[in-house]
Amino acid sequence: MNILTPVLTLSGLGVAFGAGLAIAAKKFCVVTDPRIEEVYAKLPGANCGACGMPGCMGFAEALIQGTCTVERCVVMQDEARSEVAGILGLEAKTKVKTVAVLHCHGGSKRVKDKFVYAGERDCIAVNLIAGGPKECFYGCIGYGTCAAACPFGAITMDEEELPVVDENKCTACGVCVAVCPKKLFSLVSVSRAYAVRCKSLDLGKKVLEACSAGCIACRKCEKACPVGAIKVINNLAVIDYNICDNRGECFKACPTKAIAKKENKVWKS
Figure 1 (tube, one colour):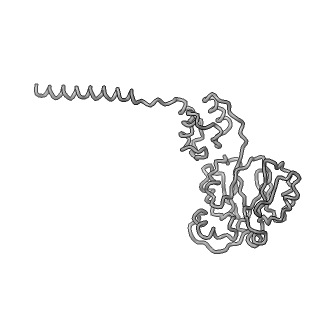
Figure 2: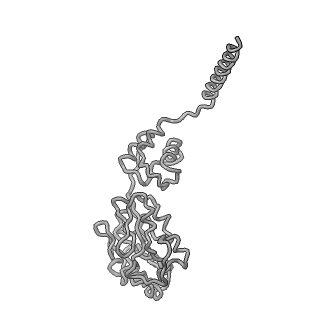
Figure 3: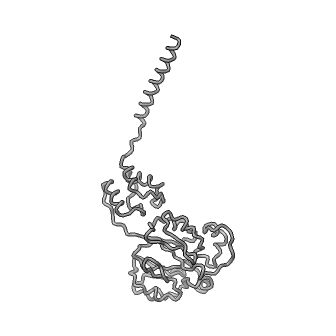
């Protein structure tokens, strides 16, 4: 009898607690939309954050909640984008492919060094020391921080210590744009065949003292363009891609080859 009492007491408490947990689980249950997992399975899983959400799962949840659109994911392929739109009951919009373009053509052969640096080879770190070792304050430092940061392996460094973007791998996620301390990358439509490969705002004389391939604001490109798509602003030629029709007159007129032409997905000056 002495043993039976505690056994019954514990059994009763177990039943009571179990019933309480069951009621609580039912009352506080969070219903998850099954489409979230379905959408998530279609996403690239890169978790690059280019959409502005905390990873692909966060993006999937935002899509279901209707707080963002499918087009926010720049990494997703067209087929997957259409499938996700179908799950959401929407029609996928046609997306123009954009890729990262480097606006610097200086490199180790064209730009002088102003001091010898022997520390950590990280662009962000060395940029804190007088803007880096290059004579051109605006140019590429060349330590490959962008290449290391690219989640898709789309950037490699060439023999002149300049980043080279592989258009086949580039997804326009914008990581290189964000990580470059000199802000030398921009996202441009793959259909564009010309780009200004310089970011210097210095006067022409100072530009040439530092780099042989810099923009000297001579305005020859501006005068040569028949549609007015390129203007010199703050000592730097700027192409308006909303107007540019890829005629290439600016490329032919540039005396320092600061304007590059894309041939077979490779930029050449």
